[in-house]
Image 1 (cartoon, rainbow, N blue to C red):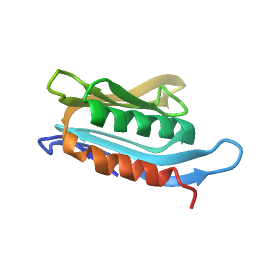
Image 2 (cartoon, one colour):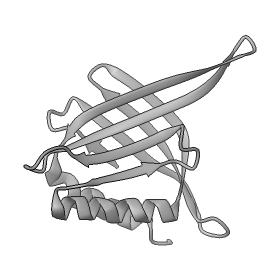
Image 3 (tube, rainbow, N blue to C red):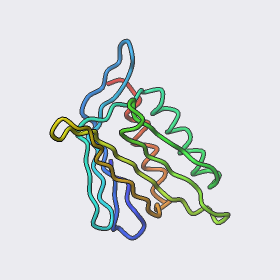
Length: 139
């Protein structure tokens, strides 16, 4: 699934890698972000299906009301977050994405991080919600 900016210069791609339905129902995604010359990716970000379900409902509500926010964090919340928020009374929505990857360099810990925001095309809400709902149904 792709989430694009209004101007087409930024996008977030989420590709399902694995889904687990027993014990702790969850999904793994490969995530890539490209925005205005900045790029980052993370090959495996896990989400609890309950969090995906709550996020999908919040997106549908944001689409209906054009007010509020919808936020999704990975099971390791410091590694990935995706947020949609209404920013004015006209109902314009901004998408914010944060990726953080811990790395080791010569026995020292560092974080590579990328944080981007862009204006979201609200006409894409119905298809985004539909794609997410499809993921929530066991195949």
